[in-house]
Amino acid sequence: MTTTQNVAVGIVALVGLGWAASRGPATAALARQTTATAPKPPALSLALEAHVQVGTPLDVGAVPRGRRRIVSINGGTFSGPNGLKGRVLPGGADWQIVRADGFAELDTRYTLQTDAGQIIYVQNAGMRHAAPEVMARLNTGQTVDPSLVYFRTVATFETAAPELQWLTRAIIVGTGERYPNDVVVRFWRVE
Image (cartoon, rainbow, N blue to C red; front, side, top):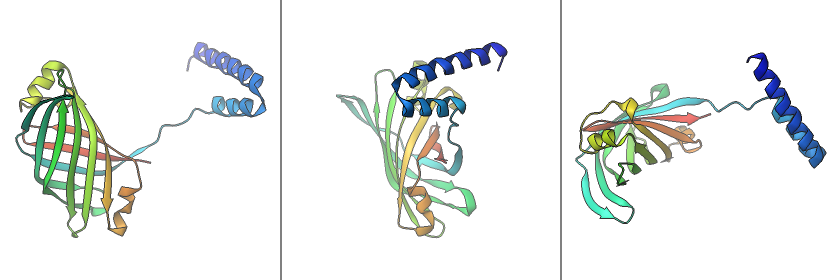
């Protein structure tokens, strides 16, 4: 930080402490604690990466919230730390709502099977959006540069496998890339 920035931070801290002191000793103590050290954002660690084969979207049509599309999940593979790997089972789908501006609400549910035979149910809610011309190309099955698309999810996992319970006991966020016939999702555990 520059000297000017340090002075500005110090002034803000003093003003904040003065306000907190006027509110009572507990508030003043909390203000001193939070101004002394800024909180660190949580770290992320890769939980797994899935390469999911998808079918041609089934266009249900215009519904009150937008255009309903159902994209079947036809298979794929996944891998993660400590030798975790397996396949994406066919039979899941992504039930999407695509708004008039191309913004997509995602509700994806599918099943993984590890190479050891363990079953993992995945429910992945998220959103995908980009500039209108990029979304128009993406929604018609064209390849677009993934860096132009905001594709984020929050996943929940269910499994009976004791050694995989770490998936069920963490916040897992995802980053996605959509291609004409598949989707790549990287799942990150919030530490």
